[in-house]
Image 1 (tube, rainbow, N blue to C red):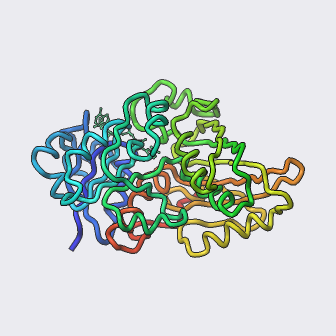
Image 2 (cartoon, rainbow, N blue to C red):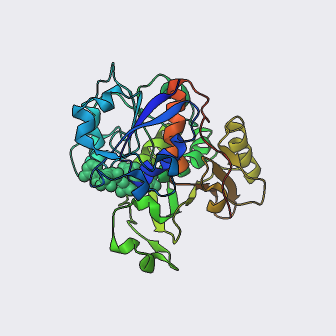
Image 3 (cartoon, helix red, strand yellow):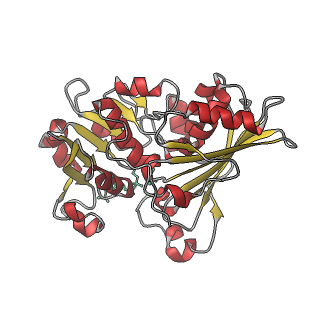
Length: 351
Ligand SMILES: NC(=O)c1ccc[n+]([C@@H]2O[C@H](COP(=O)([O-])OP(=O)(O)OC[C@H]3O[C@@H](n4cnc5c(N)ncnc54)[C@H](OP(=O)(O)O)[C@@H]3O)[C@@H](O)[C@H]2O)c1
């Protein structure tokens, strides 16, 4: 029998992608759905690409709390703007309640100062949460023992999966990490914003929140520092790309003396040999966002720039799948003991 998954924030981009993945999941069924301004509307009015759910009504979030619908679900996915998940999670019993997967940032950072610096409020952290990036060393076992998983951010997912093994194995040096990453517009969510209008975005690339201002910076620092075993500094420049989905991240850091392109490629190949969603591309092939769209895959390529003495890793993910909803489903699969790939595809939909 299927286990019931409730989605809070079902009207958003990440919520909609969760619904798409859940509707094809062999062991989970779509349960009650909740939203804010969309409460009372049918899924079919908002997500026209989901015909099997079109008649289901989105309910107000508060009703999920007072009616007990959230507490009675087997799994609750929280896909809300930052600062909102903590409030809801604290009202669901940690011992007897459902598995909770937070797609927002509220439970990702261990350092409360980093939270207040980048998110501008007191930490909403409540309870025990596990950072859910399954392919990092040791992470899958921790996730399997958890009832609450903080799903990583989209940019940090692409960056960490490329660079963490190289830092952990000492092939890349733990200082001066530079990240330039381009994202499609869904990365900013569905809320109306003039800077995201088609006429502003089409035909143009634009940098934003450069100079250490982007809120994903401390999450990259946290994950890469854990991998390196020492503090890492990250300079991150995000770029808005004129496409709906996808992230292409280029990450570089000084290479250890004598390290070659063959060494760093072999390191990634060895680390990810048994990972169904991570593909180190053949020599000479560089990642393209089009190849991972709709899939939970990460495509990686790496080179050592001998003249500059830097390792350069390029990763491509779909921000709404491996960067959000797909990773959330992968995490819940691990917690509930399903195959980690249940309901997920490694194949993309290009062109
Ligand atoms: N988009 C991505 O690529 C991506 C990747 C990784 C993680 N995430 C994270 O996932 C979360 C959702 O992102 P998104 O892109 O899906 O955003 P979104 O498209 O803007 O959707 C936000 C959702 O939250 C609800 N909501 C909005 N304001 C609310 C409020 N004040 N109180 C309670 N609920 C509210 C919205 O409900 P109504 O529509 O009914 O108002 C909607 O369902 C965010 O924390 C984001 O950082 C997003």
